[in-house]
Image (cartoon, rainbow, N blue to C red; front, top):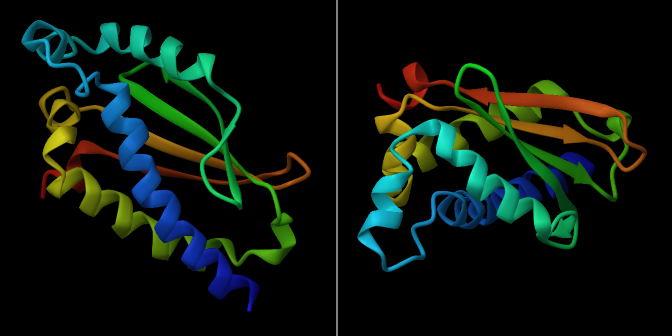
Length: 147
């Protein structure tokens, strides 16, 4: 039962993630210079700082985004906490097998995410449980979303 609920949660988190990624790349702005500015991954840091000003923040009844960080080698990591689950409540392999295709599909099909394709950005979705215990990281590489 917990795994079924967690899968439903994951679908919702996936769609919410699109909002955060779209906000991250500054696409909500009508300024064309703002949209093209993000072709340089170093400038991602400006948007990361803006997102982090509102973190931690609940993105649904089960999930909190704690922060977003820019890591070396053009990696953007989203850090989430599942506030109602402990690590032992989750089948991690099932979770990763279920979530990975959702994130890949988002990157392949959503027009707002083209900037990541243009810059070969790696996206990492890091999850911890309600006690702060690491659950897993789902890493999506350009090779995965450019197929």
